[in-house]
Image (cartoon, rainbow over all chains, first blue to last red; front, side, top):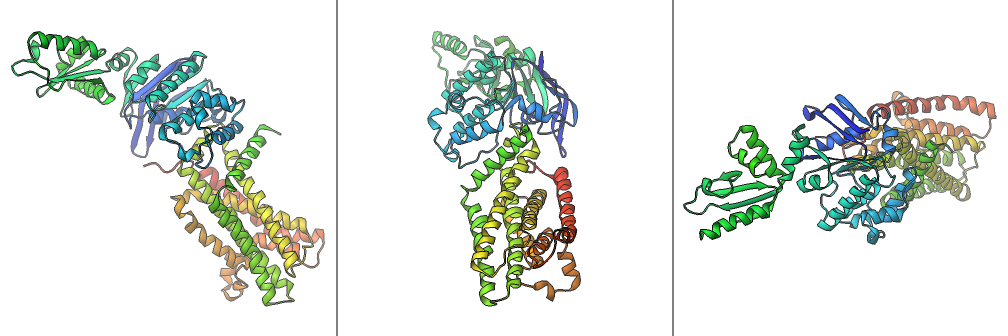
Length: 308
Length: 258
């Protein structure tokens, strides 16, 4: 069953086209990720789905309902984690959750919500004293309070430390396992890859990659780079680099460890040193550089696909 | 209780809790209300002893002004702050209806200010020559209806307020106009050109003061009171209609997008 349907969505703010022609659908119990940089139109898409803004064109349905016309009904079955909404700064975490329990129907017990969000130890802390990551967790606690059928998460783990991030991922996976439909936006490749069963990559208000292609791109989360040793040309390397920037060879691969080991063995056998060797997780920016290169038809990019 | 009424009361209770923790709100909307509301009529009574009608005039004038401060001004402050901190948006995300989110706040302020007006009135009955109103029910109606209409107008006014910081400055003229019109600064209207008093007479606070004066009038009948209050009541109803229309048409839940 389709829980979320977006078909040909367009949304303008004044002259600015925040979303132009976006379509996707999410089945019940599925985790779907909208991956994109700031200003890609992810938040706008989510806001239209949550009924905060009416679409300029296109069809949007949540559980078969129109989020604008049936706003109250849609909101009652949805949990929303907003990207930047405020809290009442002088209430404690527990007081905030208690107040919100009054605002929603059939809420979870306060302690259960705090436990799920990993905020039990902060129950007595005033919201104004929470860190950015802790506020995100409180946001999560409020979003899941009403045991929603559909969960909208706008960059749920931004500002969280690694442990909180993993904990949040666990919560999202558990909820999805229990049948909750999750639509999340993120600019972390890893997050989309770990959580989502399907994803779409958005840029400048459009879906630039979706389905298998988006998954393939997001899977290339590794980046290996080093300076080419003196006399070596890119063609001599044991693995063809994704790109060569000046004298720096760059690889975009799913498994950066393996690539780095292959390259180091090769260099070791020849008594060469790989200066400035860098092995790291690729960012969304790296991915978009690839996409841009793809669009320009750079031949180097063919290698990226082979390595992947 | 229906679901809608439940949400309305929930929001009102929540707003009351936040209000009584907020020192700024307490100092302006409560302390000032009590100090001026009691203080000025007491002074008027001391300066001109034996003129209860002057105390009534001073009391109703200052009460109208303070209602503007504690309802219109308070609503503007609360709503613009919540709008800019995206708290209205968060409240909307709960699934509560828009009218309950806004109405709950209004309900709280109406109750609160009716209570404050009662405290001020009782203090004045004890401390001054202010007579107990002949028609207390009508006085209650005036305060409740006035507070509700002023809250509604405050809500309607928020789209014109770009930031919460300028809310106080932007509501100040209404506070002063209400004071001049309803006699909070003394019988100023008598010194102003006729058309100015006519215009000031259109203010909702003027209608509140008019109805209250009928309640305090030395003699009259129930039927006579109703007939006399019909005009100002109609005026308040017109303001309520304007407020409702403006809110449904122009109210902004989000800070302006760039």
